[in-house]
Image 1 (cartoon, rainbow, N blue to C red):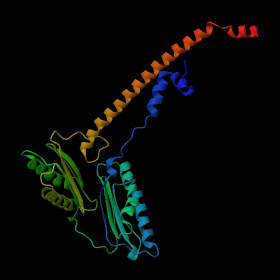
Image 2 (image 1 turned 90 degrees about the vertical axis):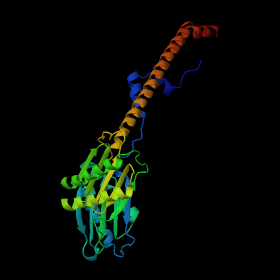
Image 3 (image 1 turned 135 degrees about the vertical axis):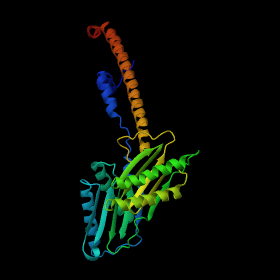
Length: 316
């Protein structure tokens, strides 16, 4: 009758609590990155700056360093670096529902991402779900604050009557709320979830006008789509329709209450994994008991002939 290998032998003789902890901590569940770091869009100037002396690169590097540093203190910051023709103006902004810690995490990855996507463009804007960064070299042609930079509309459309009325009412509340909320506003209204934000350096009146323009764009561009995001130069808005009611937001969701639905899936996965670990512990305990019985039988067998070696010696 064979005996188990030494590693298995030692594992099976561990106390149950150690077996459970060993199995629990040996599991390595995959954790998805927070959605605020997901890329929404990028905008890069087709014109690249000529930099034989490296002055532009130095100024841009200094700008990025300042912006990242300031993201540990604020959710919006605008500054200028360089001199003369190498002057570069830049800013960052985080969503109003991010903590300062998450704002920093979001912004800190943008310099590398911007360099990778836009290279030496004289102007660039990279928008993540939770923050964006923007820079322009002196002399770059300015665009209107109402200019649309990016849009996305949900593929699904709402069925039945009453959708447009609910959406338009929610968006109207949003446009007014962004202005009165000094640049950031979010609310739910009859299965509609809306969110809006303006760039941090514009006044409440201009913010309200920008939001109203974005609302009109959403109504025209997205039609009956159940969700939409409209990004203008100085503001953006988003809306989502949930036929079964707006789900409760989780602490890790930013501007998208639907991510709260993932919490249930995560809990189910954790409970399922814990149950699997529990069954495995029970199996190992059962195997250990069998091993103890096996050891008892083996010891009883050896006790039947304790002097066998002595008898062999006597024959010799």
